[in-house]
Length: 88
Image (cartoon, rainbow, N blue to C red; front, side, top):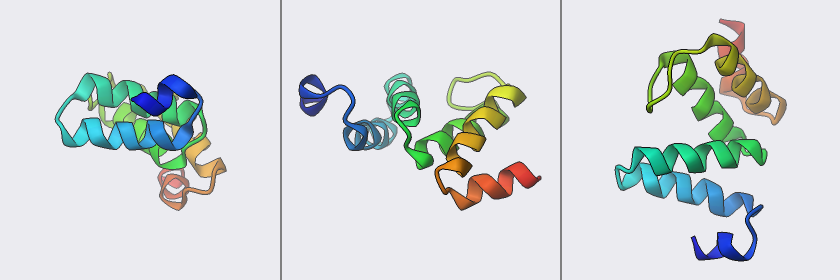
């Protein structure tokens, strides 16, 4: 969190923070960090967000449009599994 105080746009810190919060079982904080990392262009976090919207998990409602949005962003950033999901 200290790195983000210095530079709130620091993508690697948001990704690491999302992973850490998931590990520590803090879903609200994990979701917020996942969303921020995805917004900044992290393909893995965009993919995770897309799946969460598709499945209605991690505190998110099922939302096909939001799922496609995040999966497309992940695929555009080179995430192969996201590409495969979009073909389903």
